Length: 309
Image (cartoon, rainbow, N blue to C red):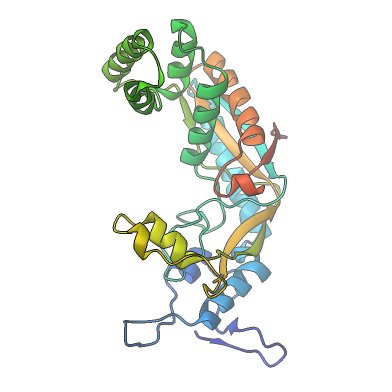
């Protein structure tokens, strides 16, 4: 397997990779290193070939297999319901593009997309959905002075409470009065005592449903990278910084996104009340703050609807 042109286009292509090849293996176990003075280098053409295959073949998703996996998930959820659990299903459709897993380094070429550990198809990890929902609910729905409001949050997500340490640091930095500082300290200690509480809702990985999702290659172009890297370095000295200018060549970075199709997010809860609450919070969170990377640039926002059986 190696990148080369196919005779009809100048774009590099992968030879020996089938349309339905497992993308987890293709993306994470494929590299085309070339020796260099500073260690192995990875040709631009190699990544272009990988990205081209992923974009053109939708990461090897086979519609029939996608449907079989969706049916398997439905059967598993039905078994959980028979065992006394409450299940809520939500369909999530990208409003534009979705970038979940950006920055992941499991692949030598760093194509950056969250993939299912077995099928290799795009997914939205349950941890991502739970984290976004918890962040939104904590900021928008919880009255931190109301024990019942805090307890509802704990019933869904468990403990410890999010970001109480950061809140305490802000208070200790003098941004609130002494009375507020004392109250924050009391809350922090109470949250720490609840560090072992388990939430009543499980957020499962969201998988493609109703057909394959659309995979699209994207690109971002960081400017004045040497200057910004120097600013972020602990060793940077102001007098040694080189001012940003045109001689800092922008370096395009390609990555994969999901731009169409539908995922189904599944919540499994111990009771109906927490299931309904978590479901409502999830729907609001993915629409309001989004999931994944680059939400400030419009990525990651999802339209949420009840799943159609």
